[in-house]
Picture 1 (cartoon, rainbow, N blue to C red):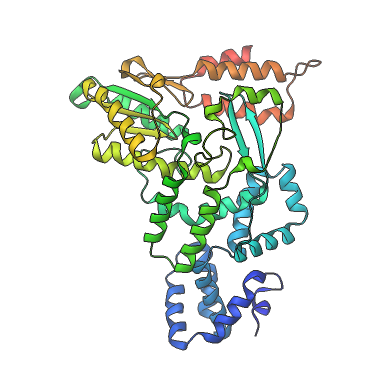
Picture 2: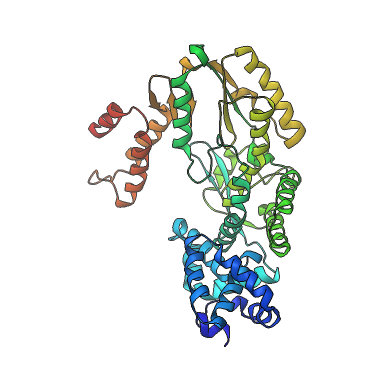
Length: 430
């Protein structure tokens, strides 16, 4: 019985040869071990296959068990790639690149799988553009097929690093996010200091973070973590090969610029990937960059929590806040954190944005102004919404377009996490 007759004509096309080779070489003793391994799997998708592996004919069982083992030996399988494709499609369904990929979906997926398995995969051309809100940022967005690969890699290695991430890191993580970070901030402010002592906060920001990530340091952190894992050697080699390729790829070597050319001048040279050291910088706009940013700054998280001993701490990407009852202690921390960043991560603090105040003064954080008694929406956020509403409102009938609804709902959702009853009422009246 060939594998195609078990799974269908197209399923597992990229791994048929490897499975057929394994089935002819595996011993009965090894097969029993593999069956025990299959029985130990607990995720819903694995359980579905497990039921077939335990109760169908012995020959089918052997193939299914081998298939399960193969999933844990390699990251380049059709199942994993198709899962990554669907994840990518959720957010990019109506983009031009996504539609082009979708037109020849099966061919493109299997072609991409073949390139990854043979290690002939090459990163495609990036699209560069500048976003102006809330502040000018240079974006290098990967092609749709590359985004699929980004999801594939993150699906494989995210859990390894998640186990090491501290609870106080809130950016780009499942079950976290901006609103959870603000909620934690409110908790610290309401609770105050120990024994009702006055509580102070130290807010800091890293200067040009994404532009200044050192690729060699980042690669060393990732490489050590993967090598120390107890996964199969083949799996490790594939993960390391793909991670290295993504980290060290220079998006400026092959890109097209979209948008108004004059917006380029809004980006300072020290914040642009187009200038400076090519061995530094992660492109804003890629899933892997967001994930790797947490990996990189996890070193700083542990320094602040473990070495310096601060329990009250919140970080969202490169913005972070430390709380303590001792104002003088917080004053000393600035130089200690800056020294650690320079020595270990080749980064530096943006001293102009460093702020040390009492919590009663309120904290400007993630689009909110938070005080112990209440939370307000930042004025800049409200102004941006008003500008968009006045700009997008139809000239003839004074109505908004259907395409504007998601944007408006997003702002309303943001307002919902603040004391904003009067604000929403005023906006409706206007």
